[in-house]
Amino acid sequence: MTLSAIETTGLSKRYPGGRGVADLDLTVQHGEVFGFLGPNGAGKTTTMKMILDLIRPTSGTIRVLGLDPVTQGAELRAQIGYLPGELVLEGSENVGEMLGFFAQLQGNVDPAWVDELAGRLELDRSRKVKSLSKGNKQKVGIVQAFMHRPALLVLDEPTSGLDPLMQQVFLDLVSEARDRGQTVFMSSHILSEVQEVADRVAIIKDGRLVTVSTVESLQRRAVSQVEIHFGEPFRTEDFTSLAHVGGVRAEDRVLRCVVDGSVDALVKQVARYRVEALFCHKPDLEALFMDEYVKEGASVAH
Ligand SMILES: Nc1ncnc2c1ncn2[C@@H]1O[C@H](COP(=O)(O)OP(=O)(O)O)[C@@H](O)[C@H]1O
Ligand SMILES: [Mg+2]
Image (cartoon, rainbow, N blue to C red; front, side):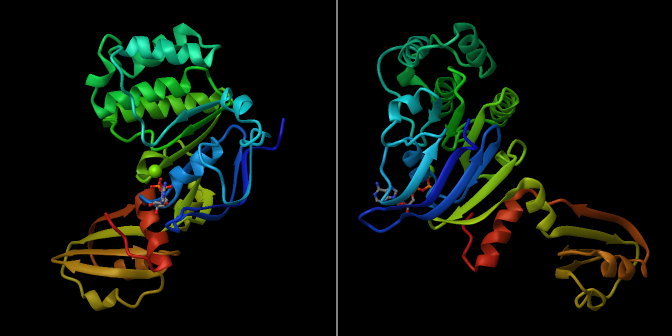
């Protein structure tokens, strides 16, 4: 057993137009769920395709499950479940026939497990594949990726097109996979969709890694959003120059601000007034993501 499931050093891909990824040093440990996060165009799909040897690096190295994707691709693909970002499913067969075909290609597939996957995702296997909605095609892709219980799942934007209920079913499948010892490397541009299951996340921007961290420590590092409802009028100026407090906005008897670090100064100032309610929001990764971008001085698109 090698130390890590995926290891890249100085991994770079330059397209003729210039973009791609640059100098990626990434380590995904065996048995962890690793979220690969970034906005559209950041380089997530490019990285995943290099892991699968669907495209070749311009420079740098990759080891996946201890193997070299370029020279040991066949051996490697048998141990990987891959959900492509641009999933194209066509053909005149129905879902059941297509899954049967995938199972045959893959080998070593337990039909009862395919039944369970399709059932939990509420996939109607009598439907023609080409008549399926984007969300239902995505479910076929997910079943296909999970069906052989691969050592490594590489899932490119797996939750795209799934409704919230199915997103939850999917997240359950991911955490069960981890419980069985499988490794999951999944990308998303919607952070709240991965924070529930990810052990660690990497944030990629413009082809470069911005952060690699546990979800927990990202959250610890992030600013808290505080909202205070006063029982009497207050002076906004009392709050605008407190230590660790920023973004102060006042409206009627409500004060909103963000706290970066200790809340001590804020709490003591607040206590000078009558307080009806106080809310402190733990930020989700969405807010953190914005934070990383703001720190980097980049513009943020919604
Ligand atoms: N085949 C290609 N030829 C040229 N540029 C590409 C190609 N594929 C992706 N790119 C560019 O590389 C960057 C990263 O793309 P991609 O990996 O698809 O990002 P993501 O999956 O994070 O949305 C983008 O700027 C994209 O336009
Ligand atoms: Mg992509």
